[in-house]
Length: 638
Image (cartoon, rainbow, N blue to C red; front, side, top):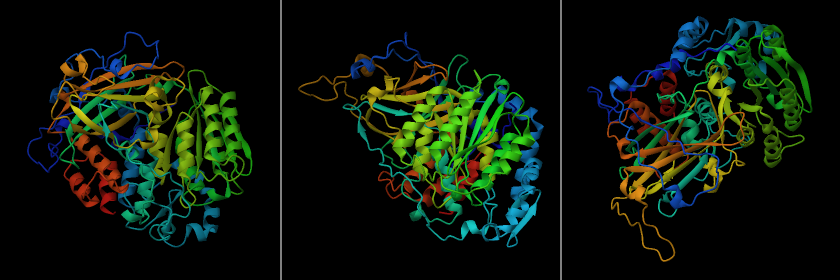
């Protein structure tokens, strides 16, 4: 399968130590003295065959740090991988496409690719007939095969080219959208509860959905409760984390800084980077598009947007790939099955002939899609169902518990799941997140064509090619240094401590070269006593390793290879050498995005901090790609 890489994302791979204006994050414009995250050397246990859950005291018995976790100098600053450079330099079509898109965005009129032109021209008449939805003759221009809205106030980074209808609903409409309220993580005592355990989560749906709301005119107070998951805001962006070693699956890049929203605490930033698969262009894909064509998808920002997005993905398939399309409404139908990926015209015709009507029997569609995925299964290939829907399931299996049971059974056959959410009004975020979490999958929200291109083309490798499944994290805090801690975000990914070593408990899926950011706000133990407290029934004295080492915490990562059922364990000691008063721009930007998420969720830990304060902080950074610039513009509009 051919791959394309967006040039703008590679800008983030420039060494951050060369950026100006980072430093303390207080607007310093002198020569940069910022510190890149410390690359933590992994430690492997002598044996990974035993999964007996250890006691707290046993967990503390780690060997002394190797001493290799030093600050990166300018000469050692991170650089893009060779494969990424080769891909970017060698794919002229991707560069041309990216340049054309940027030029069109500046003019506020998107010129679509020739493939999208051919796929949408045939449907032009039907679009014109739907004047009440598309208002084709009221503020639209049909150009280069797509509908471009000419409103000069459109967002230049992810513009809404579907028309003023998108903005006419008024402020704060919800129309039955379904979100799961979150209970914010509180501070936890490091003596009584030294372990923090949770599953990996690389979803980004929450950010794109938030962008849609802001562009749609939502005020800060009108953002629906539960719609903002802080970790998904942070993980939407590209950070310059160093890649794992040749024989490692994960790398940890650590920074400890003064917390920007509380001068009394510290903020730990852990940048997790997954390995990149070698020879990924030679890996064949077996993809089943599971498309919701029920009546609720009959809207400009649902099925038509999906069709244009899938067209961009089809262009990247070749003769070794296999494509199937299953639709579901009142029942499920197989549109095409096992078609070679180079049959672009046939696949696009099938996609663009889809129409929406009827009720929504998602359970029936899921069963049919997995059945086809199993029939055309490619050994050592990328076998995946890509489900596109607004989540409004109203026939057959409709409850979250029933869907969870169905999808949990299906994931055991080696087929992974990607969920693409579309639309507004009846959007069911709870259902889609459940499907992705329980189906060894990832979850994205598509609010515009450029987001579809980002997810399905530019980030295809990290989105759809899995390098590790059931990934879990467990962080043990050393009470010598840390008195209390709280995890920022990941509220719905929490696990019991004993589940970390239980291979029957699900974690999360991480794709090739994918990055994930974890943050902890911590309160320091100023006394640093070897004896933490005096209790009658248990000994809470620090172990020798805890008392004598300079380790603040131990990061343990447990994961399974995509084709294996037993997990592997890697550990990363985080020491006081990771603390810096001069964090780089990536570290500060991630912290400010987390601040934004906390404010949107009415956090009790941000004090009097306002969105305007966050925008001032972000504006002092040298932002290294268009998505980070977009974030600044979005929060200025709140």
